[in-house]
Image (cartoon, rainbow, N blue to C red; front, side, top):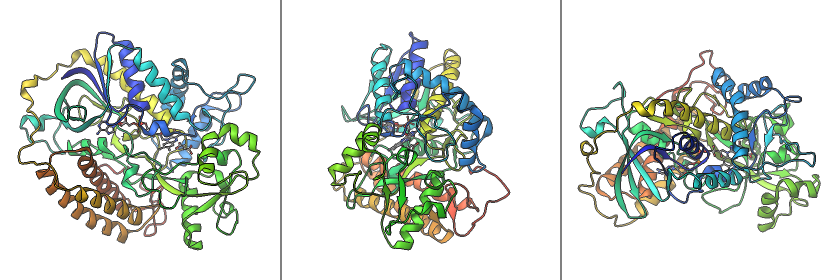
Length: 534
Ligand code: FAD
Ligand code: SIN
């Protein structure tokens, strides 16, 4: 199959880009691939909202920039921060034009929320299911554009580069080029090659690498792993953001339900097992300090108290107001026997967001020619060592737009590769798997080791241990991969091992504590401010 533009991912980044390209180039074909249902994305689960300076009287670009830089702990690219904050407002307006609705007060003004690290109320939201509303609006709009083909249940296996033409491609090869992808089409169970002139990776995050995460099952870091295999550049993978308040439900595996930070923005207070409001011991901004600080404080309180959770106290908040802003949270808690107006909510930190990823420039270009990346899989320089809450949906839209601007300028100058030059997928020597236990057990081991050794607080010995265990998992999985027919489960395991390796390696290289990377062996910040690129 051939297409002009290929988009991998149907979250906010992929859909925004596809829409813009399709509107601008009605004579071109755009294909979006997504590995499960179209709306099963991190985007759909976003709760708190999207940050933007919508009220220039009370807020300013300067303040939003400053908040982002403070959260990023010295590692943000200031120019990129300025781009995102300033251009973000127009992107939010476009989203509204496409039909997304944000909560408004009776006077017609947006109801703006506040989250950790923000000095002003600037977060637009749709109750506590902002992401679902955005995803709905974008998918509706996509349907109106005849030159977009959205194919669900299509698992992208690998990027096609010169390597597949028989050339030796290494990290030092200049001008690595992407011609398309190999895909396992789950609708037909066939492996296909899809060739394109321009490819956008919008494949999202990697929270599933950890045992406890707010991310859905699709968040397995496939895009990052594919780019790494194709010898592209990956940056700052050590900065994994743990959300301080995922609902603590013993026995629940996979995705943890999020209790949005907006609850603390509206007055929710964190308390330890003794009922003490502890955040003032850690930071003057208390419950609304940036996420790295709150998550570490909770981790410490849990260690001191020997508990597996702390509590979020909302009992003092007016019931009507809570129900209006947080209906999903209210219902979810009630469904497990917690009436938030009378009982505290048990919460614990969970892996939430990957600040690093595929290294991109100001137009979302990766180190591989004709390959762009936007959204959570990309490392643009916005977040530095710690992302400011509600900045990621904004970043995804801004860089999807910038990728679109660059791509439409270049598309007519790109010649599609002759498909006869690209070999079909090589499945020689592979057989149907006899048992799945080899995959599921390795996955369990991977998640455990990442949570136990590469979590909120790290040290050199734990990282070395993690590395050794990852080596073994890698070796065993590669042997399995060589002789087994590919499946999403096997490929995801392989991708997650790669992503885990990149997290651990980057963490080992960073000899300091900065932002989300906190190691007891290097407690202070180094004078040398640097990105770790692998
Ligand atoms: P996603 O929305 O995750 O989409 C990824 C897409 O890639 C999916 O369609 C998936 O199927 C596809 N894909 C992946 N691998 C493959 C493959 N191998 N083959 C084919 N397709 C593939 N951010 C905010 O700014 N504000 C918030 O309030 C907020 N709340 C959040 C709450 C939760 C619970 C979570 C998990 C995240 C939240 N975030 C929030 C972060 C934000 O939602 C994400 O960073 C953002 O939505 C990522 O969008 P994306 O387009 O990059 O990727
Ligand atoms: C939240 O609603 O607390 C999550 C916001 C974010 O991840 O930006």
